[in-house]
Length: 193
Length: 445
Image (tube, rainbow over all chains, first blue to last red; front, side, top):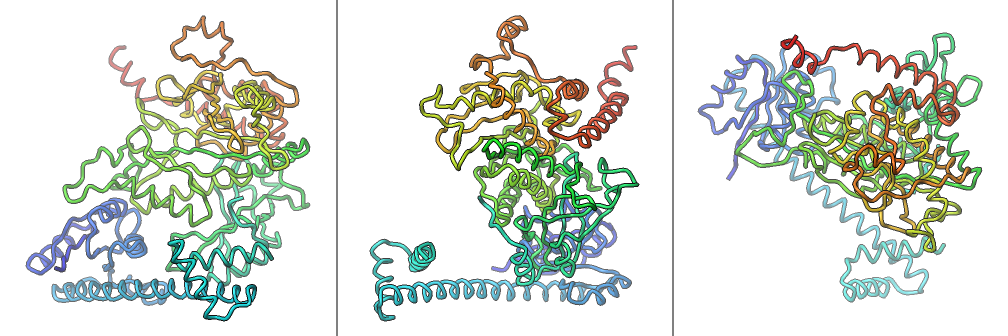
């Protein structure tokens, strides 16, 4: 079941109150809130919200820092609230800024839709990131195994099939993953050169 | 050796491969504060050719206005990319030595001071290995972001999730340090609430001094990323343990640890004993370097596992000098009074020179004291010839000025600037009215 817990980092009581009202009869829940950067980070890391809404002008660190940490450390996606004048700055920053943002003043609909958008995008991106990480890893393993195979073929004058089978046998007999066998072969070869 | 030895070409290649955008040219001032000159990757070539200059007069304790141009000479093997900004332009760092415009090493650069000491040791055939154990506190900040002395341990937040903020932060610190090439030996919560310790593997003295500076930077940065404030202040809270930086040290010759001697008493060589003798002889004089702040001396009091008396022991857990049980390549002497506010370059330099003085002049240390010194009366301690560390920064400065070895090790420039600044610090502290005085006297008188 999808939990839709939100953490709000907002120092202006009026803004906070507005957001509370908007969220009150929505599918979302406000877990907690903070009025300064360090406090926000501490709480976000503790309560693990599904989304962080943060004001650009948040005291002590600024809101951007909180958004960065939340996303860089894979805690939650961030929605940054900026004022009209700040949104010009955002547009100029271009590539440097890759956070979802919403400009004040915003309506209830705009707010909830933005939240929804950020949440589903984050889900997709996280899934893709995991896939990419796995593929990268598989590629590295494949590279190592190919390299080790090549070494065995060269040094022991084996065919490709025989080299692979030899490694496979070692892996099964010793209960060590193929990748470790490959790395050991490469290391031995390099140190003996 | 833990870090790979990069050449200038390696650094250029990696910077390009990894899309590094900014580089911090780091160096340390004589008070142990990390400074940096920021450049973009376009200037990296220039930096590696030792062409980057900066205004030395902007650094406290460096120079007067007239002699201000200084050059930074980066050490390519210190190249490291900061792991905590993966999405934006990557930032890397290079640790630098400071040089004068005429190409001579700047005498006020602490890294050069340590190099000189290491050169002295090398002349005798010795290399120095150091493994530090560094403690620190993690405190909460208030609504304005200012540090408090409230630890997350006693703040009761939440019924939602009993996560230990400090543990998370410390784990993140270790991961980050490892990504930067550190080998972490141990990491745990310390005795006092909010206090932590991270130990990393011993390395050559210069590398270790660099690592201590890096360590402090990483701890502070990661603490911030967890909404906490890290402090290396020796005694931030009265009545609980303070933060020390125990320094495990050994000398090697031809790749072999020369403190180790299976035939020797306790498995230690004669040199090991002389080294201990040297450390004990100069302990009081070194204090202004190993324990450089007013607050340092609030930690060096009985009852909190910090040393007070000048003695060594292979058995006791809280002496000034401890000899851990391990032998072989891991044989070492542990000096327990330094605290993390010490400038690691200067501290290691004076320790090394003190130890070498012991070896050169065959200084036999007093016998080990395995009894509890804190239980002894003053007469008994005097009977054993047990002296004590200075009780304040003022006393420490007096002791430092009595010892010619300090002057020689630090060099005239650092020695003079250091004492000048520390005297000012003491004077400023001395003339402040503390809360204790108000509480104690304002009503009574």
